[in-house]
Length: 279
Picture 1: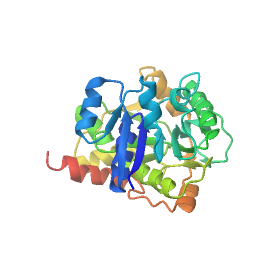
Picture 2: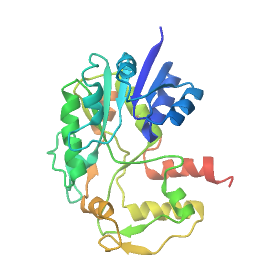
Picture 3: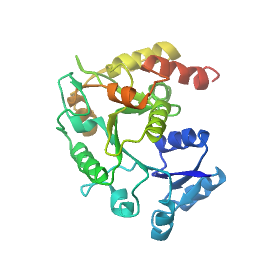
Picture 4: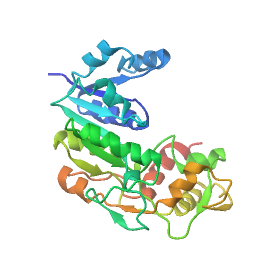
């Protein structure tokens, strides 16, 4: 019997999830606002859905797995308002962010840690989580995501990398393939209302990761910039105000999840060997 995964918001993680689900025998549905993108998805074997078409959305929600990825606004998750009344009973995954924890001065956070977002975006995520939990969703709090086409080696190559230093600052990250395998592990062991931190095993300073990428690739490092330099954007400065280490212990214990790339070193090395060594 055919099984279907519906992805509301076919972006960076949506694509990785689609690839992992397809390997498990699922057919894929996904939303796309642009007609050209819908046509492109169709050529890839994805059933493309116009999110402005209420009837098409309702039909698409008749799926075994539903992944929700859009960023929230002040009213919460836009997908909740659109399809929240159409779903229930199947696996629902909502992608949130570790930004809901706010700043912990470098300390560890766990899924039951107090939520204290320091940004408007983080507060919006808290509201969206609460919405989806009323539908029995599993909530996944994600850190900085990277993978082929979206990583610090690419930024070193194109000259957009910023070498920002703040003493003692660390943050967690996750390869997008490891994110996808965690989501599939949850689908195999669903726990409606479950909340999981998804991240790798080693929170690390951003400038240390950049230095590793430069050594690996042979590319030049940009000059050091202080984290409070007025030339940095507001979002970048807000990012550096939050300092925490995120635990992935629950996801490993409950889902049997094992990371292919347990630190940035394995992840960036794999990306470099696959995509950059031949350039």
